[in-house]
Amino acid sequence: MTQKRAVITGLGAITPIGTGVDAFWKAALNSTNGVQAITSFDTSDFKTKVGGEVKDFVANRYCTEDEIGSMGRSSRFAVAAARMAVQDSGVAIDTLDPYRIAVSMGTTMGEPQILEQGIRTKYDTSASDIPASLPRKYPCAVIPANVARAFGVKGTVTMIPTACAAGNYAFGYALDLIQLNKADVVISGGSDPFSRIAFTGFNRLLATAAESCKPFSRNRDGMAVGEGAGVLVIEELEHARKRGAAIYAEILGYGLGCDAYKMTIPDPAGSGGIQALRRAIKHAGIRAEDIDYICAHGTGTGENDKTETSIVKEVFGEQAYNVPVSSIKSMMGHTMGAASAIEGVACVLMLKHGIILPTINYQEKDPDCDLDYVPNTARECNAGIIVSNAYAFGGNTSSLVLSSFTN
Image (cartoon, rainbow, N blue to C red; front, top):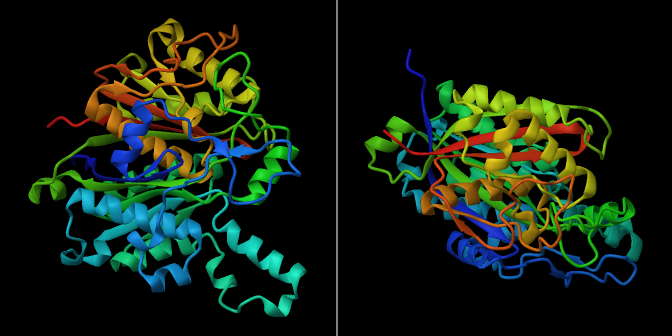
């Protein structure tokens, strides 16, 4: 039996460097630094004052007033990015069997600003003043539910809260749904809003950068907390062909792993990342030498960047020095559960345009990080196959394989 193929026909992105795919891509090509002084709350009690906030998102451009009133920021991001992606795909959702459409989303924090609002109300006034509607906006499962409601989807609706790897997990599950003939179209991605909870936690871990995120650079001093959403419309190939869809790229496969070394630190040997990358290559039916570029997890922390470098070396051997590796978190900070979803959008655009996005803020070579990190400036490269890595707390690891579409 012929394996069903999953292709990408639509893109949506909300990021700290631009809302909308065109704005995001233009800013990324220009090496824009979206990690700036935080404006959404007072940071005077924190060592770190910067983060990757989305500054140009206007909810009522994408959502109705009723939707805005009933959803938190993460759901607004998700619904908006989904509407962008569906419009971009040209798929007429309302003409399709709603039971053959699915939603697969990922997140880290869900709707943390709802929790923060409730806590502020409780301590500023009293718990009795918390609106009865507020708790209903909080569970992370409401994010894909709100996306499904926006489009009348009645197929599988799933939230995969595997933190910073969640976008890749969501894309992998979308591929499973199509290959198992459970869906013809999957709206898939990840969303997370800027959170004081996450910002405070990473500050307490001493994991945040003072001024800018500098992945793989010797003088890197941490990650930057960010926010955003990325969504792909993933479609069964024959379904897309029948409606004459423009196809961006194809998902060849994915791999998952878990080193369970420590809650906040990866196994220094990179066991989980190695497992995920090797599984992704096998699932995609390719060889390591077929891969033209790696979109790195690349957080800018000392341990992550060193470990990810060793993972690439272990899997690729000497070829590792010939494969470009870059981190777009250098531009946006770490958007948590949206990170690998936005990176998925970026990878599709890199395949389309034949350009690799850079690692900005790269200043000093590190003997522990000695690969080609595409420093500071975008590079022309006719990449045919791309791997995107995403790693998370608790040891959750993932790798996604994307390729240019060929008949």
